[in-house]
Image 1 (cartoon, rainbow, N blue to C red):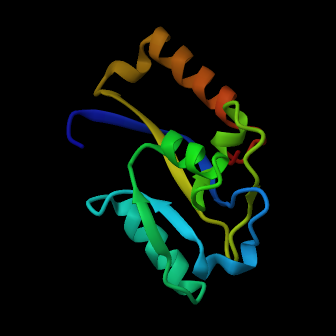
Image 2 (image 1 turned 90 degrees about the horizontal axis):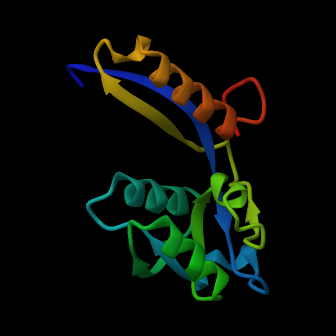
Length: 140
């Protein structure tokens, strides 16, 4: 956007989350939680399911990723969740790679134009990159 300096923090892999005891091979017959209809993320989720050969049974809609996590934990729905979920205190959520090429979301910071040279902004951006990335390639 005009007047902003944008910098990528990391690429956060998107993974399949299925409640414990559910068979990941049965994705076509289980309930799903996805983002709201106005969200590009919902379009991505539906296209991903269709590319895998099934139409998801969307029972729940929310743009709150923590609600998606809780729905999986409670055994109510499958979801697509970012890898950061595991690193943010939800190690019990079973996450597995999606079929096909890796999918990820990109996380950015944005500051007013000219602000990126300020020492505090540089330190915050550096700290965010360190906290978010595991390897040197910018991927979690």
